[in-house]
Image (cartoon, rainbow, N blue to C red; front, side, top):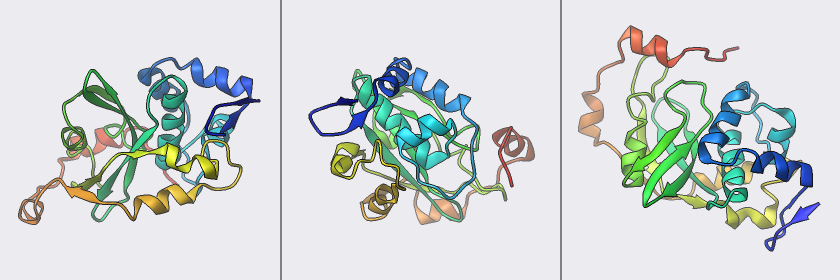
Length: 205
């Protein structure tokens, strides 16, 4: 077993798998290679590594753990929607610019290159590709970044129990508005082509 100063534990084999991803884009490729699953679960990064499948929330935690192991801060950010489900992403910084890693059932809500000058700018990059099946653009707010080190004592990286405590924490923190209510009231629905493209290879019951 390998252990760092904060007390989290991974096997040598698990560490090798995470380190083999090497870069944020490598982490995204690993997530993209996993099937998207629809279970109401909250697996730790260890469980995701073992099962080789995840959904949005689990993918964000997996990416945060992998970022930590390759030398980045383990940061996640919550995107909050109206008439839709929220989306959790892992964020990272290169030369003062933000990028993101994400698992999503929609094609446009995944990876972002580190070219965004602020987290607001990064969050807005998801706006047009964040929609529900009625074609409504649903993204409304984004949270401050959360450093996952705060959950080390609860074993978020390796727990065999569900890690819902992270999702519950995200419900308690401040979120910042991306658009005004007046702007939201005037939004148009996506055209059919964009809707179909965004749902390409979408997993469904």
